[in-house]
Image 1 (cartoon, rainbow, N blue to C red):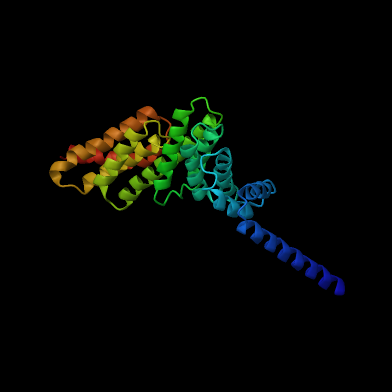
Image 2: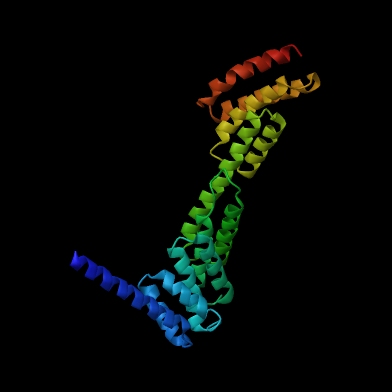
Length: 264
């Protein structure tokens, strides 16, 4: 028990001594010494202490080689502690302040990557997703032979797929809410916006069913064109995907649409 108390006491004294020493460094007016200590903290992965010193030195070394390193490592500290939003800000700041740095390309990519990392769940507002797409596209345009272009394109594909999936879910939501006009418009816009969408087969099926339900809930003078649109989407689905499992789902609506047209 005495040994444990002794160890705990020694540890507490060591921590107190370390805190006092760091407080002394913070109060010091020797910025070169602070810089060396901050770099040492960073190298030892003590990002919290490194950041405190970096913040104090931002203005002192602005537009100097040391200022360049401070800004870049500040961004890296936030990135390595998973604070991607602030990291993106500092990486972008680095590119703005040091556009000719050897690290400018890497910082441009990292800013976009951090924005990618904070892209929200598909059910939430996608403002950050659009921001990440813009940054990735800007990186690729500026550094077409860059080291991270391949990865940047992969991230772009992932983000665009997320937006496409969100748009598709909105189409389905309109249909389930029986807002058939909005559903049809959304489906049409989706096909124009994403001509190579993997959902094309489903969309054609959904459109056929939507047009049938739309016709059923329309005034008589509008029914004919909407029944015909139902059959047209079914025929397109059958032509493009003759083995589609969705054909059987749509067939009952198409059969009824044809019968309705015979009586119009």
